[in-house]
Length: 419
Ligand code: PMP
Ligand code: GLU
Image (cartoon, rainbow, N blue to C red; front, side, top):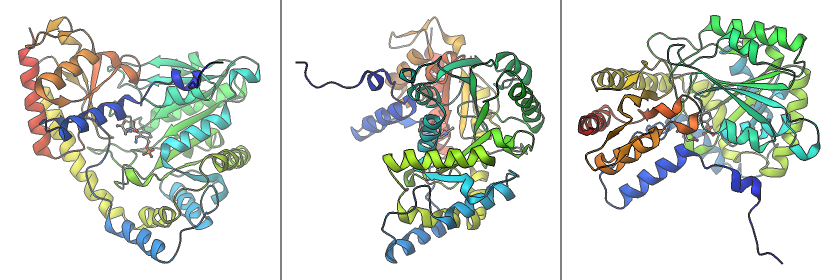
């Protein structure tokens, strides 16, 4: 008899590079190394007090029991109201909304509700994934049984997929398109006109070759936009709103990464069916999110606007600082950040060189590793974001301007040392 073993599905699953590089930097720091981390997309602010107070009040009042799986009615209502008022998504009721332990769990549960694993028979259905994009979509979609087709974008196109390329890519087996705007890792934002053109393509394809087509839009960075750039929700376009699953969460805008509060929504009859399916699946995995976290969600959405704006302004100043400084570093190409909390830099001009410590620089990974070893600056290598991420590194500016300066001094020194 063979000994205990881990499932091949999970053995094949690649770890999240964003999480693992951040953990490595944290471990080096704990061991006394002077490491600067531009790694995690984790706001460095504390959660606004009003939000904490609601959770504390609920906890002290004894809100410590199981709750409805997708959240209590008042919390779902607050989310529904927010998505209707701020995002313009039509036709939502609280029954079209579900709360999960972070946007990550919402994504996991949604994907499992949409796809069948191969053992269920039939041809695998397809996810179209414009890249570079956040590291978790592809592994989670594959885990759910989908086949992922990457659609590489370019810096010249602002790392956005055009409606015409999407139209060409959608085939009979396409079940889902995943978009992330503002983009992690690219820092770019889809303008309204691009999303309207994409909506036309989705409407046309769903009337013909892809009747089951849906679009999942991750809007977790929606409030972190800079320089007058506006976020627009694809789900607000009435012609396709019932085909759009909007994912969002409180981690970024409200500085609540540790709380694990995310949600998703989809209007229409299928939206209701999806929420029922999600309730069944989540009911077998984790049931509700922490009861007193639920109490804080309406407070965040309704009462923390000023705090969110204060944090956004700080991020805007950091984005500008980082863009300005990066422009002066040799062989680093980056678009100015329009949204999210990242600068995405093409470092391929340095491939083929050697570092002062004798390391060969042939990829984003080797660039990042040498940078960490020799200059104690941790960044995320772009390979796992999908093409052309392999030529890029991602720098998170969820840190003070002083840290940005010190970190970029190190990047500059590193680049100058390359021969
Ligand atoms: N989507 C994107 C684009 C992200 O960058 C992240 C990282 N936090 C998530 C979803 C997951 O967020 P959370 O699970 O903390 O809500
Ligand atoms: N999303 C954040 C990032 O990309 C946090 C880590 C993760 O969940 O991937 O850095």
